[in-house]
Length: 212
Image (cartoon, rainbow, N blue to C red):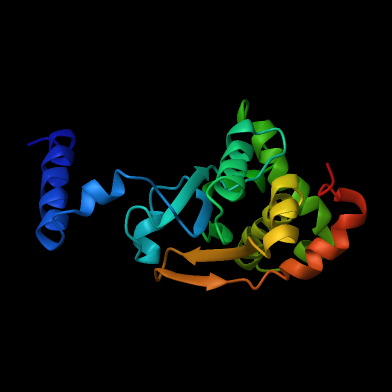
């Protein structure tokens, strides 16, 4: 059996496992979704969102791209945030990056990467914002890990800048925006404890969008 064919065999086993525990599992899922959490993560194959959180289908709304970026001109990411926050009413938005991120590593190299240049510039802009802190870290691996964390933080800021998040939060007290980092080497998640309230208060003078 090829690895391609194995996918369908695994799928049948997965269905049997779930229906064996709960015969109504899929019929219940088919009626709609009501997740509490929007997960914005990296497209890396080693970071499967539901599995690392121990959650079932229907528990989390997911958006993934290279290096877990939230770019204002990326209609895909912005549409996901609009739908998850404005229509599904998620209570939490998580930006989750990971150590060993290839996108962050590529952005740290002084190389022309063609089509990727525009995307990776978002991470290079993060480096520019924190260049003093990052350049002071002598160990290149530690500098790399710190940039992963700072990139997560800045993408959380980008989420907070959106109108739908500001309006929904002021109206309902949710969503709360979180930054997590996943360590592939040990499988553990860590909450970076992004100060959501402080960031929102700080940026509102310029990015205040709740009116209208």
